[in-house]
Length: 104
Image: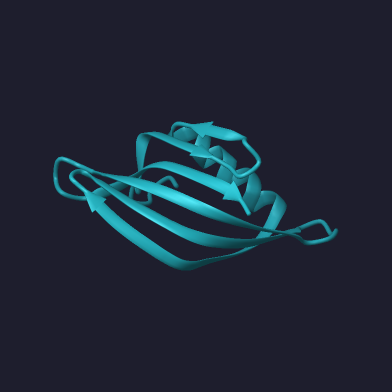
């Protein structure tokens, strides 16, 4: 994420469908890097719904993901219902603040 726009809040919290949680932008960046180093990732977001309430926007969607190990092995597939909460920033932009995935 270095050098890219900061799309997530400093205090971002992500709870994966398996219950594993990530807290903070640096921990999220490390988690993404570990995943990209280990898997070819194919992810589809289906039927997103968005609701805005004050300084919060919520997106709920079905997410299908396939993880294929880079060093060989079977592809693992899962489907989650994922809720993303974005918080409006002082300048009017939005940043991802919370993410929760629920295994279907």
